[in-house]
Length: 103
Image 1 (tube, rainbow, N blue to C red):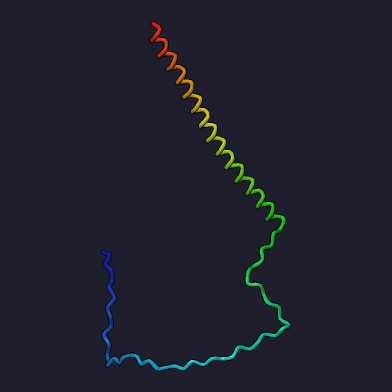
Image 2: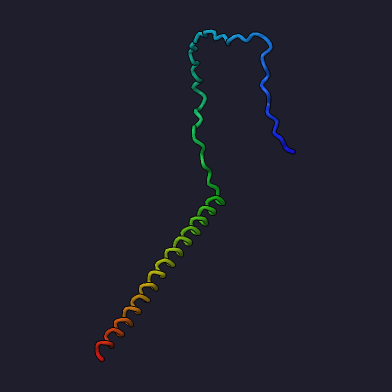
């Protein structure tokens, strides 16, 4: 039903000659000096900070700091809870082992 059509390469009809490469000459021109009255344009673009852009940057930075701080505090809290639970388990196991030796 769907058959790809393969393009056929047309055969040359006449005699094909190789491309002729002609030598060229290099001509150097003397640059004309720029007038002294024209000021040089800076090559880098200047960034203009409007009050809206500054407010957006401050808001974005605050949001990033709050998110990173919340993640770090939650990780610290997870480590503290894990340590406390391990300590409670150790005390319980120690008391069970010591009560076995008393009997």
